[in-house]
Amino acid sequence: MEEFDVAIIGAGSGGYVAAIRAADLGKKVAIIEHREIGGTCLNRGCIPTKALLKMAEIYTCTKESQSFGTIVGNVSFDPNAIQRRKDAVIQRLVAGINFLFKARKIVVKKGNGKFLDPHTIEITSDEGIEKIKAKDIIIATGSEPAMMPAFKIDRKNVLTSDEALNITEYPKSILIVGAGAIGVEFSTIFSTFGTKVTIVEMMPQVIPALKDRKLASMLQRTLIKKGIEIKTGIKIDNIEIQGNGNVVSTLSNGEEITTEKVLVSIGRKLNSTGIGIEELGIKTEKGKILVDEKLRTNIPNIYAIGDVIGGLLLAHKAQKEGGIVAEIIAGKDKKMDYRVVPWAIFSSPEIASVGLTEEEAKENSIDTIVSEFPFIANGKAVVMNSTDGEVKIIAKNDTKEIIGAQIFGPEASMIIAELALAVENKLTLNDIAYTVHVHPTLPETVMEVAKNGLEK
Image 1: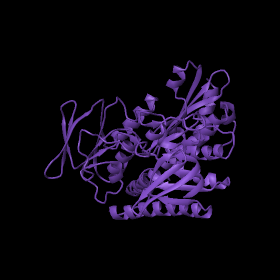
Image 2: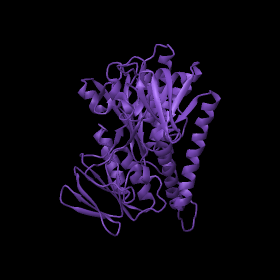
Image 3: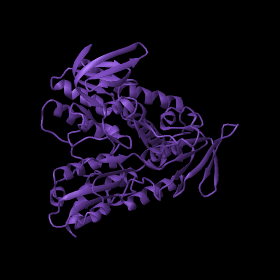
Image 4: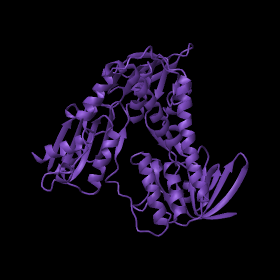
């Protein structure tokens, strides 16, 4: 039986980062994966959706190029070519991870891993069963699309995000169940490529997790302007696939909507079952594995990271946890700080947030300065013809320390990095306002919003 210093179940965003960091710290590492290296993010999530969104953006820019003085004839798109480009991006990045594994002599075990005891994992694959031992074990099994048990998801007419990524013929119409990040991003992709999109969300706003209602409202208005129909505060009572392949969805208000496809994007299900943790007595709560600030379960040598421990289901959060847990195993005094985990939704325009929202600051009785600056007053945004939205900063009134920020506008996912750095390092409005920013650029909005805050 092979023995390792560290074994990791799951080679997704958290798992592969943990493997690489542990190997760099001198550990003998094995990583177990029953699907593709890179996990959901690289193969069925972040990367392929962003590849599709980029191609949708290029298609839109080409159609609108006349307003920039470029005359283009009839503009069309090739769904098969779009898929080839998306797949090429994935393959390139997977190859990169495999190269990093090989360079560090990380052993990849293909198959399903299951605990036999706190130090032994049984790996089942098409080639048979093997067992390995490890001093420390990291659970990084991630999540998968949540299903609607009451309705049939045939993955042909009623889809999850996994199938939606691989469409080679865009439907004339689609109903998207759920207006979270996945639903909003797919609504952008489908509507750009000519599909009539209807979103149904049981909560009263799009992006229900977003506590900044103003930004959620701005996003909703923008989606509607793009021709996307949005129905909030409504549930799906029934989904029925017709003989001709069309799908009839019955809403809680009695309305029936017929579409060619339905996409179910109601969230993610944590992959904590089937790996033997119940038999070991590892504590869970509603499917998530419970860990302490050191990412350790109630069994001292077993750790868990990423989606399977709940919280924000974000690849970069899992990656940070992966690096932290590898260093903890190597004896370093580290812990995960969740105060500063930025997130973004790649709608058009994008939305991003870090730290506290205005509403959360009020809930915590923090006396704040709230400052806003619109993109319409930014030179680069005007040049880009992308002036919707604003940047908002929340700072403490007494010290001017920046404790949160939200952005709705062009390249929000990139601009938020400066504000994440500010929150992480307890920078003040003065620090940002008096830092020279290149002109003309979108990040100038951050400087301007900080200046506005100082004037209050």
